[in-house]
Length: 228
DNA sequence: CGCCTTTGACCGGCGC
DNA sequence: GCGCCGGTCAAAGGCG
Image (cartoon, rainbow, N blue to C red):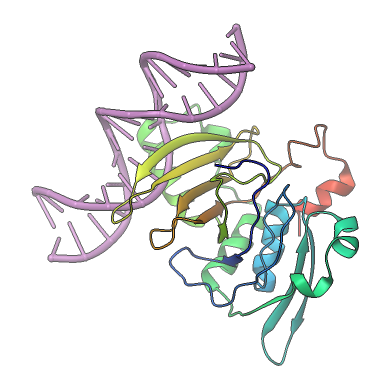
């Protein structure tokens, strides 16, 4: 098992785990990797920017073909010097995901169901119900990556809170939560049953803070990256 | 000692 | 209503 020098050769993003990614990009990837979704719908891209703000996203949408061109990279300097831009190009036929769009707008509406205010004061039963409802409301984005490490470094700190063997797979699914207070972003990590070399990472929710590896508080300008 | 992972129990959703 | 299944909880133990 190699640790830091793994190479991603295969990378894609799709909005719901059950969907099959339609187009993959093949390219070398820096060892300190992030999660650039290659070729995703504009709405997904924006949401992803808030999930992984350490990545730099450049995208443009072709209104006639309904294709979104996406460049995604961790750092600006690498974007131009290390790799040719064409290597990062990936196209994916995208269609609006009404569910995802609904979730996104819902997240930005001011009503947040009072969950944070009451989480210590309400009954366990009520909590469960709220959680059950909330679970469905968070935007989710998932992508698969060829990697021999399960948990990819995205700049955030995660705490594992569960592991489950899902049906018809020999590899367990791991559940992680962002360690930051008041940040409810979760991610699931599992290996593809058909090809165990592929890691499927699913993000749920959006970070309300900067990545933990740039230690300090988020400046107002940085904060802007999380609100779109 | 604090933070993390592990892991069995529990719960709700869903199909039958 | 029942059973299966995925997701979460939380106690216990490990580690730095």
